[in-house]
Amino acid sequence: MKPSPESQQFIDVELQYGANNYAPLPVVLDRGQGARVWDVDGKEYLDFLSAYSAMNQGHAHPKIIKALTTQAQKLTLTSRAFYNNELGAYEKFMCDLLKFDRLLPMNSGAEAVETALKLTRRWGYDVKKIPENQAKIIVCDENFHGRTLGIISASTDPDSRRGFGPFIPGYVVVPFGDAVALELALKDPTVAGFMFEPMQGEAGVVVPPDGYLKKVRELTKAANVLMVADEVQTGLARTGKMLACDHEQVKPDVLILGKALSGGVLPISAVLSSHEVMLTLKPGEHGSTFGGNPLACVVARAAIEVLLEENLAEKAAQLGDVFRSELRAMNSPVVELVRGKGLLNAAVITPHQRKGEKFTAKEVCYEMAEHGLLAKQTHQHIIRFAPPLVITEAELSKGIGIIKSALTGF
Image 1: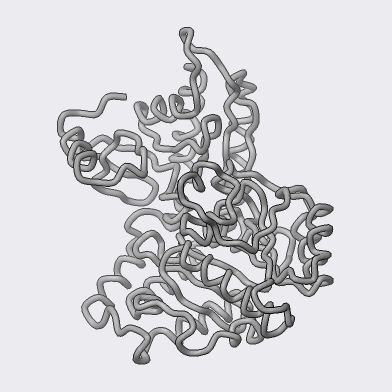
Image 2: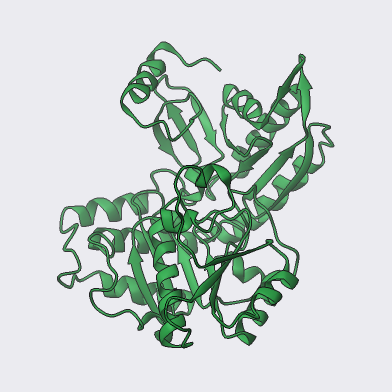
């Protein structure tokens, strides 16, 4: 895929002055609306990545943009040195909606994960009475919770860890979806929490066995261990329910949200939990200058209201069924497996030779971009498909046609 001369100019500036920690497709985007984006040359694409599910409400949703611009003209930031008139209303709104006692506001998803880790350890010492500096947190293999040093210490991905040690101790790794392995690990009385993704997005949209979430809830409760659900990517209507945990009607002790919490407008994240867990933190022990700023609070409320008013969880469930059914019906030798829930899906690409050369999911993504659809591979053989939940049936049908055409071409 060769970018135009105009696009190449923007790419060249990034390559010269930016860090080399991403490998984007050579598409330079300039504008977005709903499920569509346009590059600097005016070419239109269907967005089937949604900024890794941050754009569940679509690009430039008018209600969210109105909330942003109206509040931006009044007050954007106070820090937490003072109260502001929007934070409490936002906290109450979210707690009432999701049935939690308290909310701690942060910015990025990684910050929210770090917050949840600290809360879990503090609860382990103050409430469970784990001996000082012995608390452990169980995580799953192939997890992705962010890229801070504290989080990659729990990662099993060599690319995330190489060259960044020494790592923070206190993590125990079990296979994802394996309740037996979890039960065994929970026998350790120094375990404070089990942090997991209800579906593993970065690992390739890996869906656990039916009943796994209920078993996790049962096992953690019996072991007096916090169930910590990282729903930064799976939460907020993406999988066909408001939360992915809702598919099995389970409520975690600690819930981590981010990405679509702002509708893709600002970095906004949150941790929700009980009085017992949240009140272990005292003033000065955790915080963020921008966390809970009035602009973020107003935007987040508008973003959630859009999900509710437009029934986007139900829409994701319906269109997700159509998407998986259509792709599975291809019976393509190139596609080994299609999996997912709602509008978070993945196609696993079969190892293949094309014109004597090995091709990967990246080549398929380039082919789709040529035909007007943007998606991104995760690992070498998996393509994640996550269009905005506001996508129309006609747009989804067009996107499926492009995907089928690209896969057939290989």
